Length: 190
Image (cartoon, rainbow, N blue to C red; front, side, top):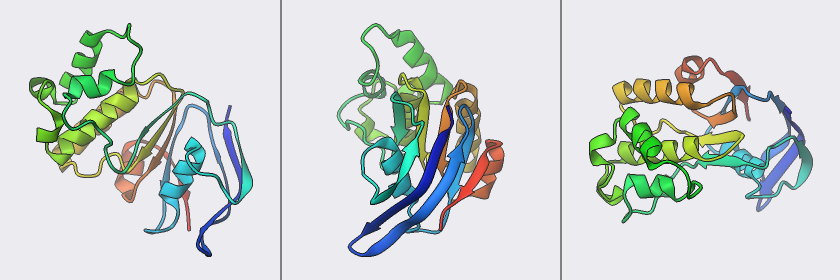
């Protein structure tokens, strides 16, 4: 089912962040959301995820099984990459598959170190693997490639495209090249 957003409005302390925003997000497709800083992109994602309520407007069709990568990685710093990913999965999930994903995204040799010892780009990749492996029908990605160098970014884009598995993806980005790299639809806020 497509996600239909109609006349969505949100303000903070009298400052309107989203002003009667309407858009459709096709099921099983990648849609990138772009706009100026402070233009409501993260707020919009938080509303779609159910973390925040709009002042007015309607949203229909958001699947109940969601996973997300936030602007901040939201990892347990003293846990390993393997444990951080495992935390969101069913107990019966195969640890070998988690290890294979960490290997594929370039974290194999470091997967047992506490993520607090990781660089920002390494933490980002752990957060991405966790979101990809979570049992979800939709992925919300808020600047998922932030902090990655160009070579790693290309590798991570390939990884994500391979593992989106026909899920609906809504991704905030500031980079038109990322929209093109994912062959994504583009929605502009603001």
